[in-house]
Amino acid sequence: MKLVIVTAVEEFQKDVLKLFKKANIESFSSSDIDGHKNGSSILMASSWFSGEKAGNESRLFFSFTEDQYIDDLFQLIEVFNSNLETSNPIKAVVVPIEKFI
Picture 1 (cartoon, rainbow, N blue to C red):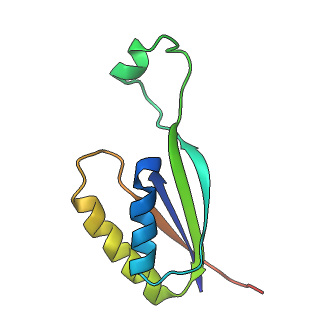
Picture 2: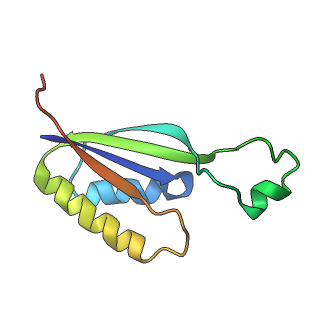
């Protein structure tokens, strides 16, 4: 068993849910998060409040699941990201679990 963590901008929430379903990951949790990128951008510099760093509305999903489902999920995410027209791909990491109850 491993822990898979997926982050995505809010606009991709429904897509991530579909990817989890296609990968047969039926039990998972999610939470609202703010995503941040360091560095200046043209938009940040032209903001009325350019001294403030605003976050992007994002989602965090996580599931304790088996390797085979994680492998399927990663393949689905790679395909999804290869067709994006944005610089905000879905990101995922896997964390091994040493013990669980």
